[in-house]
Amino acid sequence: TNADLSWWEALRAPPASAFRAARKKWGALRRGEVAPQAIIRCVEASATGSFADGMAVERGEFFPLMAGDQSKAMQYMFFAERACWKVPGLSAQPAALKKV
Image (cartoon, rainbow, N blue to C red):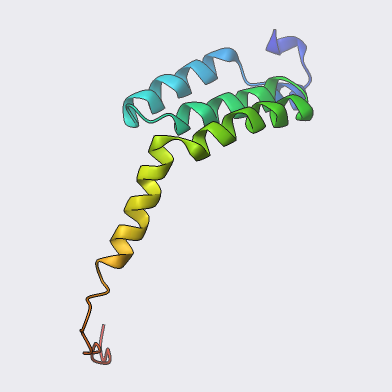
């Protein structure tokens, strides 16, 4: 139990209920998104195992997320939002800001 651990070990190893609560919270807030759940798995692996265990889980999560459809969609939106401000043929510049 956590009562048997030193204060440092207790900080290092959150109870499993903390990870269950995080999964539930972020599952509701970011419904359908895979990255938040992957982040929780990475944090859980590093908090409950060794550093090497955490890095192995992160390595296993990162590449599928990076190549996934959600990542591609977010990258598309990022560049589309920036491109919409670049109107072809527009030469006008904004006026200087004199007062806020």
